[in-house]
Length: 255
Image (cartoon, rainbow, N blue to C red; front, side, top):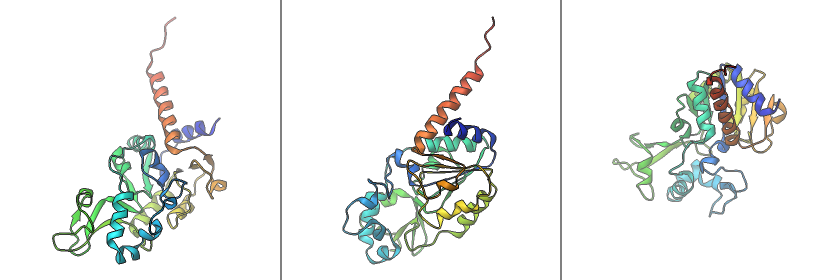
C-alpha cells in the first residue's frame, strides 16, 4: 500500500480528524510563504520581514509597517485550492472536527470550513486601537498610509505580530480538539514556529500524518510521512474519492 493509499484508508476509518496547517497550504493559491527559497524572508527590503511584522516595529514605524503589510501580507483574488476544498468536504461529512491554521488568509472559510481556529489571526478582521470599532479588509485596502478610524485611532489588523502572544482561548480549544482526535493530519508547515508547532505533542493517537514538500524536524515521530505538496496530495485524494463514488453508483452489468 502506498503512503497516499494509506492516507485514504485512515481517513475512511477515522471519525475525529484534526488538521493542523501552515503557509504551505496556501502557496498553491498564490500566497507566498515565509521560509522557502522564494518566501518573504528571502526577499530584500530596507528591514528584514520578521522585523517589519513585529509589534515594536509597528509601534515605531507604522507607515512602513502598513506599506509592507498591504504589499506583501494581503493577496487579493486568492482562491481555495484542493487542500482547502478537501478539508471542507471532510468536515461536511462529519469526519473532520476542526482545522487549526497558522495562516491569516481566510481561505479555509472561503472553501466552506466552519470550525477554523486561526492561531495567528486574520487579515479579514481589523479594529480601532482606540474605540475598538471593527473594520473588514476593504477598509485597509482603500486607505493609504496608516489607516485611521473616525475617532482618530489606528486601525490595526487582527493578526499576531512577532513579540505578541497567541490567544490563549484559541490555543486551549486547539489542544482540546487534538487530545480528542483519532487522526491528526499536519500539512504545509516545517513545524519550526513555536508555540504553535508544539501542539503536535498533545496528540496521543497512532495516526499522525505529516504532509510537506520537504522534510520536517518531526518526521521521525509521525506514523505516516508524505513528502509532496499538500495541495497535490489532496487533489489526488479528491480525484480518487470521486472515482470510487462514480464506480459505486454504476449499475451492475447483467450477463
